[in-house]
Image 1 (cartoon, rainbow, N blue to C red):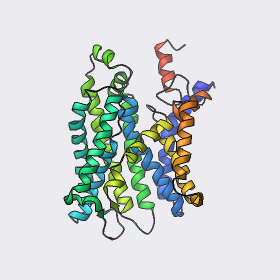
Image 2: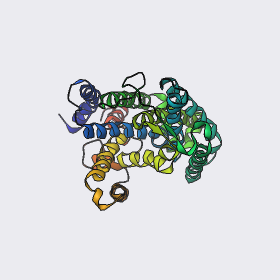
Image 3: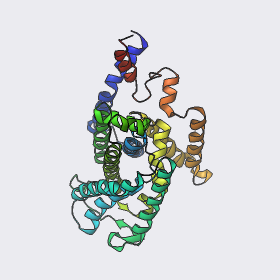
Image 4: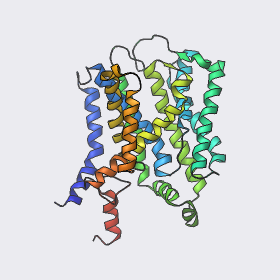
Length: 348
């Protein structure tokens, strides 16, 4: 068996295999008995889901946004207001928040998409600041004090657990599978090719009949919807929500940097970025706390600087460099692009 066939075989079983592993961790008794390890696994899946949500717009479509904290925050406040303000279950708030985030994303993106390159990125920076200040003074949603959750019984009804983290792990695993499964579906469909066409050259894509505005707005709405779902989970997991937690440039940068670390425009990049960053972040906070606050961010900053200098394509670029994935398969791991190219070239 040649290396290309081996990579193809691994690629076919990797995604189903990961789903099986997540299901086993959620079901097998004692698999998540250590609270710290469970916490790290939950954060890996959450941040991977957040990064993949951003990757739809920033990686596949090429529209670099630093404003996803807005949609993340809307989702978080949707769940928070359902629980705290209206004293009901969080699920209606999650759905309303996600849909509202999609609508808001289209409303603010329509004029912003008239900008190109770094001008679009700067505009998204401003949007985060505007919404952050607005939420800080908006008394209806708790203002600067935010919303503190009541103490309720552990249940799926309220999506709250205090005794153990198994429920949270199961929930974030389902969220992870939903987001990554959606991206896996669309990346090989017509819409996925439209996204990549717009990224590679908007004018060229339009000359071939692609409605670039519709493609970008659809990508933004889908990205915002999933980001809001992640924000709702974040609020439930932390038992509270306030503007600095969810509506900050720091939160927006996490969406971007995790994806850059793993590899933009790739299916596995967001997961690999989170799998490296989150354990590094949590273990340095735990074991290097005596060096003072911010050590984890210093290490992360050094890692990002090294990555940008050594391999701008991120961890996926390193995997391609060492032959673990196809060198021409920059978008899809384990040679899927190589395989497609072989078909188009007569199988040579």
